[in-house]
Length: 205
Image (cartoon, rainbow, N blue to C red; front, side, top):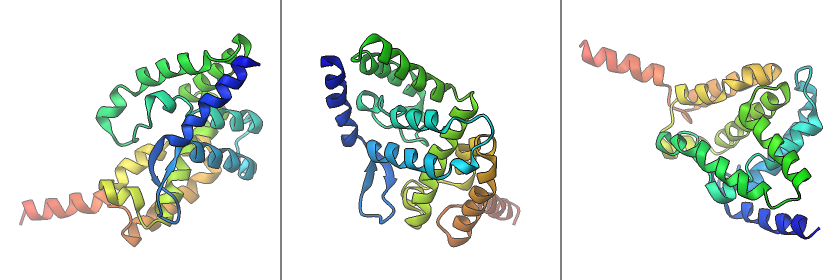
């Protein structure tokens, strides 16, 4: 029990890890603990859209622990190319320390959950990853571009980021595509196709 209580106290630090994503009211950035809670609830609410073979309870557990490593590794902005170069190594080291606080059997269980999410190969991991991509979309749509505007994010970058939804939660894919189109139309997200066309016209004027 001593090890388990130590772990429970340690993971409180996730509440201090700030993400780039704004809350839907735009008042501040969310922290990683809030993000994980939001995803776990999403998995329960959207369970009917999960593909065959997805274990919802398993997905919820996965989503609750998938970002615990950020206690040591920090949150790496998904569009930060340089930061993502070292992300895997930093998070693997964090996982070794953090899950190692628990008794061996629980350490192994949580590490396997984390590894499964990171590998993204099982239907459950793909569904969990899909939700992890959809949640920031909703926040950016609700904040009129939020993080996208702050960092000048383009449609092609977002499309690459959410591609996993097409296979991880195919019934939600049309909704995601419509949301992105609506955000481009509203001016919340830069349409790189239009920018490329405009540049071509200027160069060939």
